[in-house]
Image (cartoon, rainbow, N blue to C red; front, top):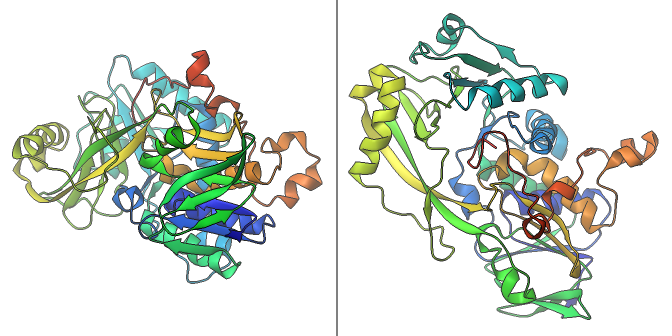
Length: 411
């Protein structure tokens, strides 16, 4: 048995962010246990889109704080070689007349209220920055210039390198099989090769978070969902200078971005294939699936009616009933802090979520508005977001964290 100040389960982008933040907040002995390799799980399958556009205000706040980190990533990690692979191309979101129009208008107003740079474009203005797309049915178009996409695997590996520099220990290929408890308090974990002692455990297990139910008897409302992603190569370029596009008017609420040259990465922002058990292996994408996605793309990007399939893959979301994460302490098990159920938002929120979970684990306030200003500054990257809306109890009380857009990956 070895003894640690804190143990993190999982070394995806959330787990590595947590470990780095634990170290910067003063934890001396931090252990990260990863069942496979750093960043090899669902992190490696992320589309990497970064935006602050949410109808859930807490998500918007976390995304805004996270963007600050992504935009100054090397400085944040104090590592001049660290890279997020950030492409600052902007984020364009449009809605026709219908049920998504009011939520879009309200979300744009909320972004402005938080000081986020966002503008409302005309159809002509939108076509100037994304000329391969048609906007003739758009009733409202929002544009967030300080947005884009990045590389989730690069972010996770950079966080891990920075955490190691601060003394964090990573063990790969080490699957946790049991949570050790003493009188409803965490005392450590058991793995396939040994026992590790710690007074606090932070679970960032993603689609494997259902294991918490086996270890504690607590209900974990989580379903692994497989989503299909394709890259289409069209006759016109979708350049890195063109913005990410969210189509609220399409059947699948498509999101699209440049994949380099004439290629477009595209997927749907609606429910995917529910898996019977967690599995991040590649699933099948049939030609019918490609055709269904391709038809929606061609309706919005006319030249892509002649596009060919360049590549395809699948990614798995850890989805909660309201498509928002569970963050913070678990009251029934003292010393257990969780971060799961990101439902496609995890990468966008990972820097701020890593900070707030580290604060919870160390017993520091997460609502820094309760602290004196000098104490807020000492925390480095404050979070003014209460974790109460993200609590596990909301699924028992019925106070779900459902955004104005309804369930789905816009939130």
